[in-house]
Image 1 (cartoon, one colour):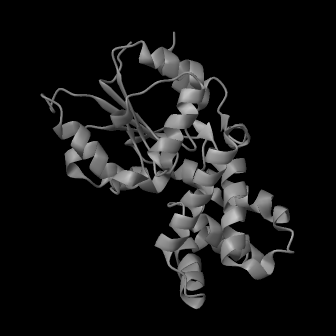
Image 2: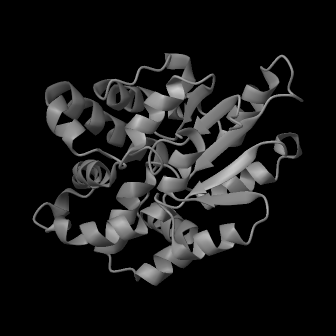
Length: 258
């Protein structure tokens, strides 16, 4: 079986299903920003929040998504025009994305520092994914995690499950660069870029499409994880894209485990 030299994986939506934690942390942050909604039953928006998670690109958008639902904005409108919906809320309510991001990370930090067990319990690793990762670690493959989550959060979750990756192999939000740039750096760091094989597994179609647009990355094999945070429309679009392979979790396992 032909394996890549480097396997780059997204974290949320590929390795770990963090939707319950997303919503719980989002609620905490939301109530700091909109204190007047403290009596509102925000849990009733959980199902819609989970369904609409694919529109989120950066963490600070999550409280804005909950705000959109609270304001009664139609789900179809959110799916179709999320960037405009988010910008409108930010502008109308004089919000700053960086401040929202700081509050979100602070809530996570406080939760982890004071009740790590309950925070970890809200994360569910996809079925079989941990055994696949452990198997990959035993192969001659350099495994990298490229995520928009803070790297320390991903590392803590992996360590809890007995998967130890060098800190430099977990490239999170703190690096402040897009995923395609990280892939470029991985390629450039190779002694023989022309001979290196990189596979990138991501659950967000837009991210893969941006990688596609980089001529220097044309040799990277791109995979859309169909078990992650994407919609059927996105999966159909990916299947019609000749340079993106749509993977099921079973197919992902078959590529590395005999």
